[in-house]
Length: 292
Image 1 (cartoon, rainbow, N blue to C red):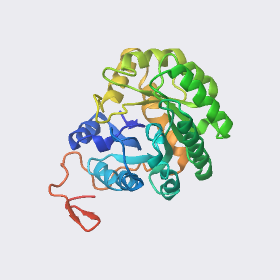
Image 2: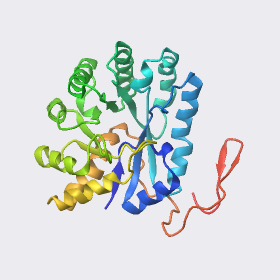
Image 3: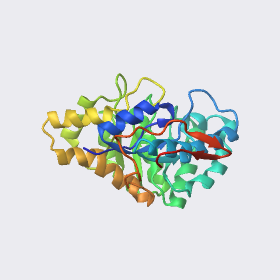
Image 4: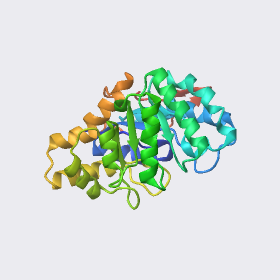
């Protein structure tokens, strides 16, 4: 079984997670830019974070046989902080880089005017750079927030097939399905969706334009929820091909629109060999021994 997790925050995870994910069949991930859990106080902190997403984390994932990609953006929670607004001027520096496969996460948190202004600006960047957009729906007032999200997407002129609306549930999936956008579902241990609810949605709506992710971060989350969704699908009567569509072919099709996916096996990687110990740093370069 091959798995592509289209939304997971690996910078918050350990190397043991990478090992377990590889063993579960995960061969590619997308890590969206998001907030740290506390406010960033300067644009420079975003620059360092973005550099880490497209540099160190990409390298770290490869040590465990996993291809890492990123989405870059100013997330809606931080869009309300005027200290972060200058990040919009920095984004073009990153949106043209290898491994950046979408703009995001963008959208709404509390549905403020500031969030909407930043949302619209980043959709314009997605169009300019011909990149998909990964959209975060608010945790509160999700139904009205999702409808408002789709209104902004429509008015922006971006093609709906270039937009994934994430963190959906039973109350919002129909609206997004009808819009032509991709439908994203975060599978969590306690909150958002679980794998059994996800299976029920797939039984009702089918597998087309469906994206299933773990969204694992520094909170109570599980980077193997993609695999658990696969098992739940098989138990419910879905075929192996159905599972492959949802957990591999769909994220490849969505992010493949960027033209920047790298899904080749990591050269020299052997699951039988653990990564070489003693990764060292010299200046700004990362050096290692046994394999790349």
